[in-house]
Length: 153
Length: 176
Image 1 (spheres, rainbow over the protein chains, first blue to last red):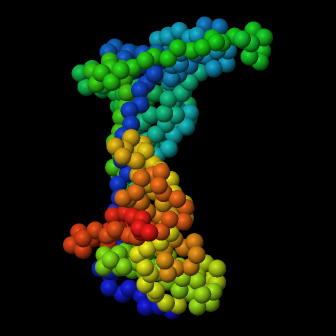
Image 2: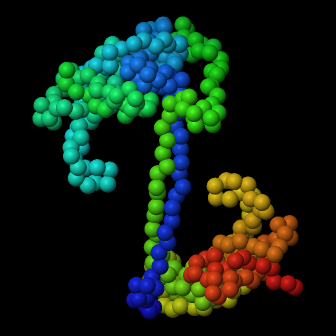
Image 3: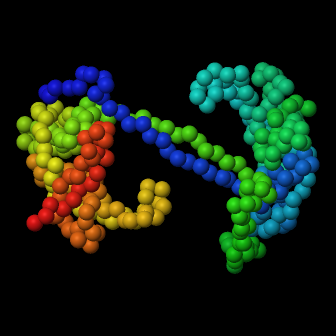
């Protein structure tokens, strides 16, 4: 065996930083959705002109028959089909519980994942009707966080 | 163009939506952005800590395994051939031989460099064959480098050294 370093100051480490910066644009259909949400507080979905499937989030093409879609207005309301209660934040520190839910939106074949609010975890059930609560118009930025949460109808 | 079922057609080409920087800056399109703060701390361990500390003193150190007799650099605590702890520290020369090299025209972010750099694997004199480190070559034109070229380390002045591999500025050809 060889002699080892015993003075901690002699033991070395290397600090580094990884640069990462990205911009993710919403795309044509996403852009239409977020602008409608921001300006009018309304939801849109995309309906296939051929098969009638209604996409949410909206898309510009139908993925089944490559046909174009048209935007249709929807209520934004729906029902909870799955949910989970998060009690730790991203750093695994305890936080006030947040409820995440998958919500099937009325009049569409699509779903949205968002927060539930104004409800206790123990009162939620699968199939519960919910509706979106939006930020005030002047605070909206054209992002998914313009929807604060969904609350029971 | 037919795809799968006969009544399905798709456009032969799909036009994208060109965007300019100012479309994003002026908020004409919706987007999300992030600049995550990603940090890491890599612990060098016993062998590499000693190696780095010796670089600060202007010396290259390796280790010797008495089982197989190999002298290894960069140093390590265990011989990977004998599965045994290594036996002693060995100071090596700051000269070596180019084993392989590559000319790089871009930096780690893939941006063009003003002058290309020559990256080489250098077998260190005093260590066993093919034992060496990766570094850069200097005071030589890319077209003059060859495999087997003898090179010598060019060190930073002692007061500028910080116990890093960059304490060696580059390796230059040994004349003659």
